[in-house]
Amino acid sequence: MNTPIVHARGLSKRYGRAVAVDGIDLDIAPGRIVGLIGPNGSGKTTTLKAILGLIDCEGELAVLGLDPRRQRDALMAQVCFIADVAVLPRWISVAQAVDYVAGVHPRFDRAKCESFLAQTRLIPKMKVRQMSKGMVAQLHLALVMAIDARLLVLDEPTLGLDILYRKQFYKDLLERYHDAEKTLLITTHQVEEIEHILTDLIFIRDGRLVLQATMDEVGERFTELLASGEHAEAARQLGPLDERSLFGRSVFLFDGQPRERLQALGEIRTPGVADLFVATMKGGQP
Amino acid sequence: MNTFITLLKREFWEHRGGMLWAPLAVGGLMLALVAVSVVIGLLAGGGELRINGQPLLPANPAIDLAAQAAIAEGLAAAVLPSMLPLAIVLAFVVLFYALGSLYDDRRDRSVLFWASMPISNSATVLSKLVSIAIVTPLLAALVGIAVGMLVAIAIAGMMSALGSGILPRLLANADFQLAPLAVLALLPVYALWALPGIAWCMAVSAWARRAPLLWAIGMPVFAGILVSWQEAMFNRQLGGDWFWENVVGRLFGGFVPGLWFAFAGDGVSIDALEPAQADALSLVAKSSYATLTSPALWIGLIVAAGLIALAIRLRRWREDAA
Image 1: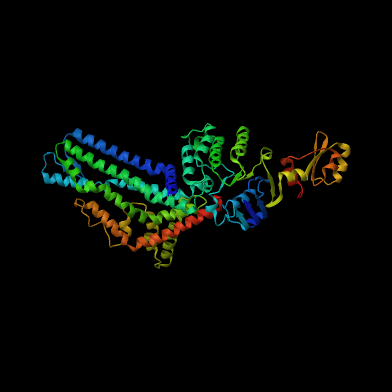
Image 2: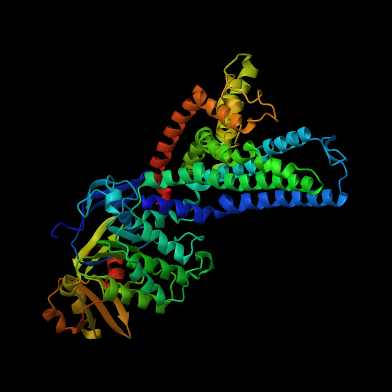
């Protein structure tokens, strides 16, 4: 179990002269829940596609010890994914979708899938073309969560769903799906909804990784300081990553500053992933 | 193997309309037309029944036994030709099925769902090929057999109701009884002759970013026009006629059942057949199998294998699919 789930060195992808992914080094250990966060066009979907063997790429890449470019068929028995756009075919019915996955996937648990479906308003005869967007996502999630995959990649899995569905989805994912044998790789724009379930955080920008850390390391490295007016100048001297104002006070984000020093200047707390993300994308590298 | 069955089921779920409902609708329409004719015939109560102006059933129903036997044989021999409308439906269904087979799911992006399953691209492409070249013609043939035999039975039954003994003669006719086998026996011949066209359409379907129909028909037709135009311009033979016949004609003619007689060359022909010949159906089957010795068939199959390999490769690496 010590082989990394994903291992990449110098992973690159060019589309003509445009560089989508620029020499990424990546290691993901088993059992982790990794958030891959980046703005649109940062290369995160391209990175996921390379990991899933959907596109060709340059550099060293191993997923579960297999090369997705050459051993994709073997890989897909142990890896599953939901892509960023709702992709179930419109003509398929709930019962057909379940039959299909049961027929082709050796690690699919029909009873588990049916118990997920029982929590929804989906009925076996219903076709995808008759479903709301939320229902399509529920069906897709029920199918995927019943697959015992060692790596599950979710690219914007909750896009377009309302908040009730989203909360329920992440709750199910954590309580009924994830265990020490399974690794999750998630991208989403709604960072604040997943930050409490993540164990690892990766920021990507312009095809490069700008941050790769466990959530514990993030808590140790980064500190947010709420400084009142008289301490603001002192705080600025310490070289914050970012500064914004909140109710007349200044909020600073620091990387690697000892908490004891900052405590003298005002209130400190661990920053949210969203704030950290915005600061990172605005400024230079943390 | 179970996986492959699931893939075939998947194809049927998606293409139920073309594979089942289209032949059933056309077959139903044919039966309805025959039913109307039969009712009119019965209401006319023994009036003359004419086909192409020839009296098929003389006004006096007590026709002699030899004539009755000839009519029963004629009806039995007509079972196969009466399936022509279904053969044409099949040609269109197969053409459009192949053109959409590796394109539709890229267009609606459901390809990403299929790609998330542990199914190789070869299995995907081959399951579609089997569904197009074997399952679809099989279903059309089953509908065709039922319709063809029901039409013959309805006409013979009407004649019997008018006082002849044609229906029992038809039912006892060996050719009539063997008609289902003769039709089913033609399915492998159909698949082999249709394969180059199907493979070409599937390769285009895997390649085209849009409008696979235009590309699939446009490319060979445009190439043919170019060659013919060069010939006309420079008054030289560049093989234009050969190209139209053996490339364009073969690619699209193969979709129509029975056109294999046109491609097999002079060695094999259906001309020797007499409509009322006792073993007409088995002769069609035999001479169809005789076309399998034609080099044109085997060259076409080698091309088809190359195109299928190309389709599998395109399916794997076509990046807009991912």
